[in-house]
Length: 115
Image (cartoon, rainbow, N blue to C red; front, side, top):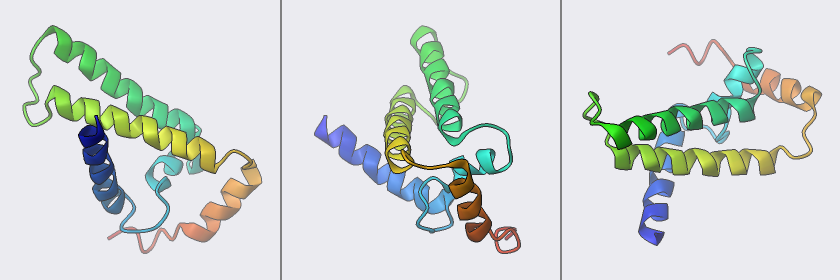
């Protein structure tokens, strides 16, 4: 199990770099949906988890047509989303809606993110 968790952490670190353009806000891509008024961040993370549960349920019954993501990859993604959700809930335990808006108004620079 330790090897699985170590591998999942390494995957998360690499993906976090890609999704946040190397920034230090690990939740940036998930928080975007809240900033845009689509859903709360925790719900967005949970939606990604539900996508993975659905894929696992399908792959338990039959082979998938997408061949570059195996069951093992989907399970690792789910492990990572659970860890991300846990970290997010811990990091935002005392957050208020005003804190969220102020943080993102200072953090998001849409002009620099177009490239």
